[in-house]
Structures are given as structure tokens and as C-alpha cells.
Length: 411
Ligand code: F6P
Image (cartoon, rainbow, N blue to C red; front, top):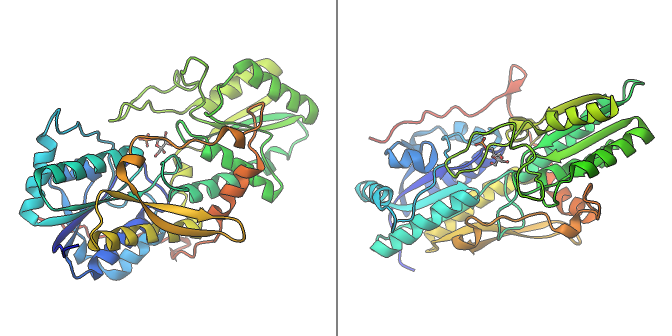
């Protein structure tokens, strides 16, 4: 493969995570070290910022500030949810990117995101190929939802799972203080995949697990839900329920859809408000004291509970993307191939972007019990290695010390 000399652009896309900036650190440090890469640029707000020509010169950042990225949650360069049309339908965006890349001699493009972002990455990669512009395009996985195909798991999930399991264990402790009966419903993100809600079961390692778990992979039946909760409540006078925001009825409509109605650039309905709704229904039926808790953004950027395994893997994924691109690879997403028997090992591999774009990896039905109200041991065995390791982060005045980048604009 021929040597390709030029600048690189790195961009972050989709919902943030506790470790997406660890991937940024991996990309930036590997790119700064690569002799083939002349400049390291970061796009503000993903592809949306790129289209406006909003780039930062990451070569001007202090090494120490960059290192703080390893423990800084959220997308430090800013993110977007922008759906690019196919270039056949509308070539405008592609021409804008091509002109910018030609002007700055950008020959490497690294896009860090979930399945919608891999769609963008795939489209840009194919366009460059079609017009004969040599630019190596690589996808770097990221999503707390863990729904990216072609990879064992995605960076961001392990930390969110650790946050959820810990929070559920703590909530469980709280719900047991009074003599009075209580029903508590806790809602997790995850859209169409139940990986996050299912991770609540890992709270069992702290001897404080939920009683019931509902995932989007199983059609939700309100009557069965009420029966399940009533049975547990009558027996224990306590019931702790973990529920995914994406549970839906047999007709496909989200149970939570009625409560929140905004949509993003990909036409996804914003979900939420489900825990309070379900808690209200249970109160009407049982008269119990109820609480609906939506973990919402807290589960996405809970860096104080980030898994060190997740941070390390996110960083490795970023550096690997750069190393592979410099070696000649393009049109691929970095993915994980893991082994759990006889000790956890995670190998980095490459997958075609088309395999990862748009598709969703769901929780296998056999990892959910028959009644559809709990997960199995296989699920727990899968997630457990991903939440291991405590991060050692810098603090200032007892609070996290996050990265403060200069973000010098590229003119
Ligand atoms: O990034 C994935 C995700 O966190 C989903 O779990 C959730 O439904 C969605 O993002 C929320 O998106 P937004 O932050 O755009 O409201």
C-alpha cells in the first residue's frame, strides 16, 4: 500500500458517553506521532461542523490537557445528529467536504459514533472512492446503547452499565429503609436495545438487585406488567423495576412515546418519561407509595463510575484506527472480538462500515427469561468483564478535573 501524506480530521457524533474522549485521545496521540499525518484537525459538532468548515487545530493542544481527555465525559469537540442524504439524491454536502479536504490536503478521516454515524462514514468513504479522491476513512465505535453490529460490544457501554448497576444497588438500599411498602420504577436509555436496562441485574453482585426487568426485545403487555408487579409487591411489600425507555406494545408504538415527542435529525423520537408513567399506573392499581426515576443523561456521562476496561478499550480503538489507516486500510470500522472463557481478552479487528451502519444488535431472546421480565446468567457473564476496573482520575477541590482544550480554530 502506498504511503499517503496529508492532514487528518477527527470528529465525534451521536449521543455522548463517559469514554468517547478516551477514543479521541487515542486518535489524537497516534495521529500526532504518525509521520504520514501532517496536521491533526478536530471538527466541531461532527459532520455538521465539518460542513461549516469549523475545525480546530489539535496539534496546538498541551499534552497534559489532552491526557485529561481520558477521564473527561461527553464529546469534547461537540457532536451532532445529522443525516446525510445519499450523494445520488443530493451531492451538496459531499462537494462541501471534498472541497474543504482538498484545500487542507486532508487524507485521513476518523469518525467516532454509533450506527447512524457509521452510515455517514460509509457514505463519505464511498463518495471519495467514486470521485477518485484518495482519503482513508475509518469508523471508531461508540454508543452506550451497545447496539452496533459487527463488534462484541461498543466503547461507552461498559461504563454506562457500571453506572446503572451501581445506581440500582444504591436505589435498592434506599427503597428498603422504611417499613411501608414501595414500588420504584427506574428507566434506562438504549432505544430499541435492552443492554442498558439488562445491566441493572449486575447489582446482584452488591446483593441489591431489581425484582423485574423489561427490555424492548420483548413486546410489552401492560396487563402482564401489572400482574408481575402486584405479585412481587404482595409478597415482599417492595418492588424495584428496571425498564428500558424503548419498550413497545405489539403494534410497535413506544410505551413512552405519548409523554415526550421531539425527534432528532435521523427522525428518532426522543424517549423518556416512562418511569413516572408506569409508577403512576402501579399506584392506581395497588395504592403503594411509588417513585419513577429516569436515569436519563446521568447514565451517559457518569465518568466518576467509568470502567477502566472501557476507558482502555476506547483509547485502543482510537489509536488502532489511525495505525490501520496509515498502513493503508479504509472503509472499515474498528471492532472488538472478545473471549470470556478462561479470562477476558479483547482483540481489535476491522469490519466493513456497511456491516455496522444502520443495523442494530439486540439482546438475544434466549438471554431473557421466558416471561420476558428478567435476564439470564448468560447476559450477566457477557457484561461483567466490561465493567471491571476503577479509573484513577485527577481532581481539583474534590471535583473531577476535566480537560480544557484551547480549541484553536483552523482558518
Ligand atoms: O446515544 C444513544 C442515546 O443515548 C439513546 O439511548 C437515547 O435514546 C438517545 O441517545 C437520546 O438522544 P438525545 O441525547 O439526542 O436526546
